[in-house]
Length: 164
Image (tube, rainbow, N blue to C red; front, side, top):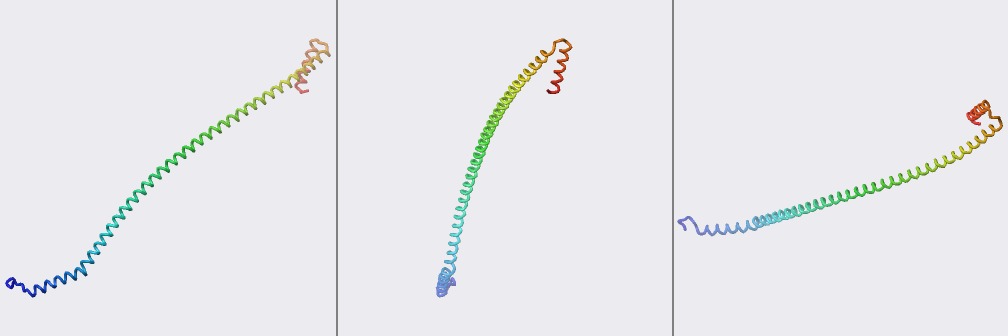
């Protein structure tokens, strides 16, 4: 081995140094570095799992939000439809009441007009009867010649115009 330039004592010393260095490096550097890399990969894996979980929760929350929003829209449309229907019913009821009141008022006015007409007819008949009696009385009190008759009509008409 001398021909190769390898000295057996040095070789053993170098092998011992190598293995000691490997042992020290393994204890001091290799194991902590591996532990740190393992912890880091675990943190990354946990972070990715957490991110996946968060993404799933966000997707679920968004789906729930969309579902609730659609449900709220449907409820709002139903409420609007109910309000329109109620308003239409109320409008119909108000129109029916107004028509009934107008019809009742027309009937009342027609009845009142008929009563007033009947009262006016009764009063007019009474006045006509009174006038006829008065005219007959005047005619009978005077002689019925043409000039007297004309004079009597003129007096009667003038009394009517004066209102007595």
